[in-house]
Amino acid sequence: MPFGRKDTREARIRRFIRRHFGVRPRTLTPYLEAFRHSSSLGCQQDGLPSNERLEFLGDSVLDMIVVDLLYSKFPEGNEGEMTRMKARLVSRESLNLLGEEIGIEHLIDAQTGKGAVHASIRGNAMEAVVGAVYLDRGFARTQRGVLRLLKRFDLEHRLQATVDFKSKLHEWGQKRKKRVQFKVVREFKRDGQQLYKMQVLVGGKVMGTSDGPSKKSAEQAAAREACRHIFGDD
Image 1 (cartoon, rainbow, N blue to C red):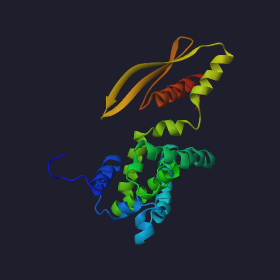
Image 2: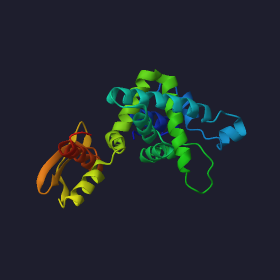
Image 3: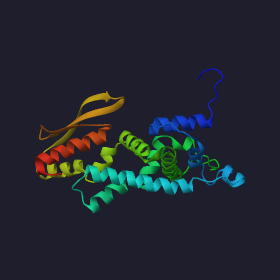
Image 4: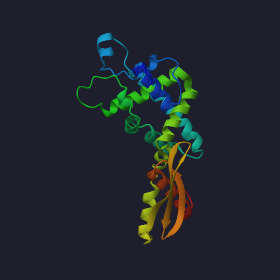
């Protein structure tokens, strides 16, 4: 850090939004509110608004982004299938884990005593930050930022996990006494993102090959390809 420059909380918030959502905040007011839990001294002593209203807004914006994604990505998907996929992507557990992955708790203004920030506080703040980005930069920029974030943290794996192709393949192999193996054939980077190329072998024969940002997602994608060959569908 250059001499004399202070690493203020405001500067850290700006970096956080740029890094994880790919946008430059125009005004910090909604972001400061998004990170302000109702237990904070600002809420308790100064009467500042908590992030609950932004949480409500961000929840709806997230739903719209994910519904638009699924509607475009699965043109033949039925309502039940897409509802389950949406629930998987924006479930409370998923948002809690995503918040933990990107270290959102380090910016949350909350009075939690000596304990760690509760998981639900992270998830709520994730929704509130999405609401703040929407207010500050509009829907299109928010949509791009959220999709970028989901892609970094295994969007494809979360979608494919609605059907566990790996388990489906293993079950099929066990019934027919065919050994199913997964093998990493390459680790590489593309546009700065770590990727894995995975092969699945059934009875020693390569039945599927695919890339993914994690070994688990690459395994699922390769297994999906193998299932297409074996079962003739998805």
